Length: 203
Image 1 (spheres, helix red, strand yellow):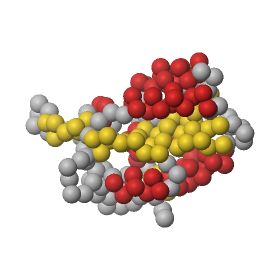
Image 2: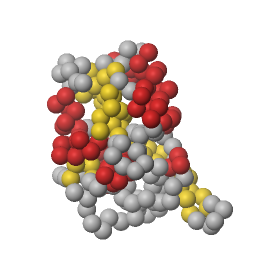
Image 3: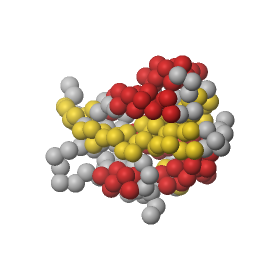
Image 4: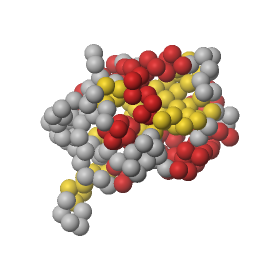
């Protein structure tokens, strides 16, 4: 699926990847992840997208974003919107699908292969557009959860589907206990309750 001389870019839907890995029972080591795809091709760019809570003394996601910025990732963030639903529960909402799609299409002329870390079916038109531009697209998610984390239409559209669980020994590590609550927008486009913090990469 990969060729050593192909120009490669990673597009990581942070909340979606975190949720898929958590459902499979492991954490993502972002240093190992980047190294793995450096090994697979000529890595042009590795993007990481996430929504973040602002106007707080401390954001539990900030250390991860800072680490990524210092270690070869391009991070794209925007403020999360908080609201109270009809049942009085605090919810968060923050979607970076448009930002990811714009970056992917702008970079497409300089790519041979795009790797999308997300199972969100809203990305199917993006995958199709990248393919029309001559870019092969691999999608990383999982079908080994109930229900599967990847939308069927996205899996069908992709040139390659990479099962996240098969990468466990390459880019994963056991989950850490006692992780603090993360108020940032995991599955934000679906208005899920506040999730928990993704793991910090090893130094």
